[in-house]
Length: 289
Length: 273
Ligand SMILES: Nc1ncnc2c1ncn2[C@@H]1O[C@H](COP(=O)(O)OP(=O)(O)O)[C@@H](O)[C@H]1O
Ligand SMILES: [Mg+2]
Image (cartoon, rainbow over all chains, first blue to last red; front, side, top):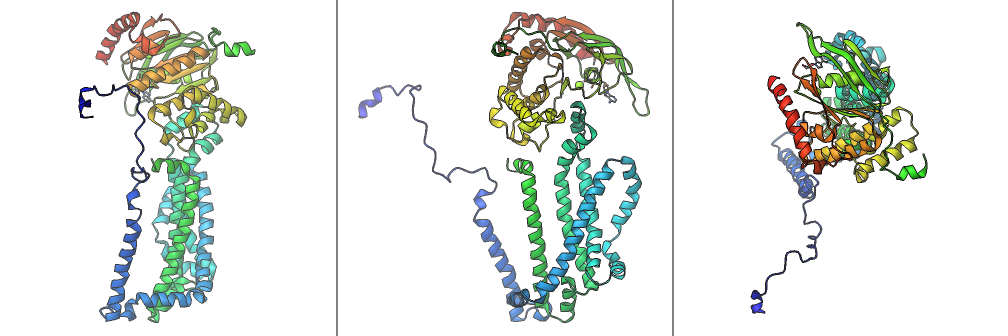
């Protein structure tokens, strides 16, 4: 076979089978950060362990005083002791009921007001200075007033959550509607779209991402306002509990309450984002490109 | 229509285009704090039914303005524009307008974008979907009906926009540098696609381009606009045989002859602008 060098190599045109594909997993996928699939969650765990481990160690050895700073192991214990008691069924329900009702009202009214005003540049100009004033006011400063007007029950929480969430939803919706490019409006004219068609088919769908941003931020701000109000006064609520635990040096219970607040808010944001992903597939298409 | 005429695409059908008449129009634009600008000097032109007319000339000489006047988007300061005797007005269902940028709605798929003009007119959904699908298949996008604009290449997006313009079978088609943002190869391909569709439908076309080669390949007539204020300074008839093959024409002697002749005029205007 060594003499075969004299034989001219195969002509290039000879059909050859296509090279076989590399085994699955070897080719780089288009997904961003695909190679982080394991290392990122691992990093989360390590980071958490270091953070809370240091805290635990410092508290256990007396480097920091657990009376003021709490201790992770005790916090978890407290969380489980209180989770299915009054903390969850009374205070968590009270806070989230108030915030969710306030947020829903703010969302509905915020979106409607923004859409209605976007149709009238004149009204928008008239409202603008008052709007800016209202938005510059630190809304938490209204808490004592609202408590006076609405009492210690759920109404004050609703009013406070509403007062902050409304403006967030309103301004994000307005920005979304106004983001419609002039080119898009020109197209609507060229195609002979009516005013209502222009709004429904050319402007509104483009505003949906902005509206969702408003909804997400609105909830977080609504929660902020409601909890701040509760800390001032209230019959029930996580803010009420925070104030009580801080005053009685129950730091572990304090942190356990914070965990419930964070978990609830994150759960809600996650729900909203899931809905957004379903509604805005076209945006997803852009991102994964 | 009988079944025989459906299959017989070579038969020359009577042109379906509108007669476009632009008489003595001129256009002033207000410019803040300054004298009004004369964008288009007194101009007249006629596009016969089924005629393909290209506008060429230096940029800023009012080609887009004249197109917008025909579309009814801009009201001329003086003079009249009529389509089949009716004064131009915006949003006429028998006028299609295509711009350099595709203007596709990002939240609609290619199919949804092409269905849009029919949707606005209340065409039944099934029929709209059928016609849009058919046209998208004709322009080679059969596999991309359900792709969003962000998933399509530049050329594919412009083909979608072209389909959106043609799907309602307008009798007047206005195009403002529709292929200028594309690479050379894609541009040639799209010129071919559009010519093939047009040779079948024979609408009246006003096609603005800054590319003289493109104008000669496509047009029956070329109007050369002079530098500002805009005005038509020359009118050439292009008697190349149809149907035309965009790729083969590049090597055609007559084509080069036209190019030389028109370029000698156009060059002076470009230099003056
Ligand atoms: N809406 C407008 N307002 C003011 N000036 C305009 C307007 N549209 C066009 N012009 C001016 O009119 C002239 C012609 O513009 P245009 O028709 O766009 O030229 P072309 O399409 O040939 O490049 C330019 O000087 C341009 O600045
Ligand atoms: Mg132009």
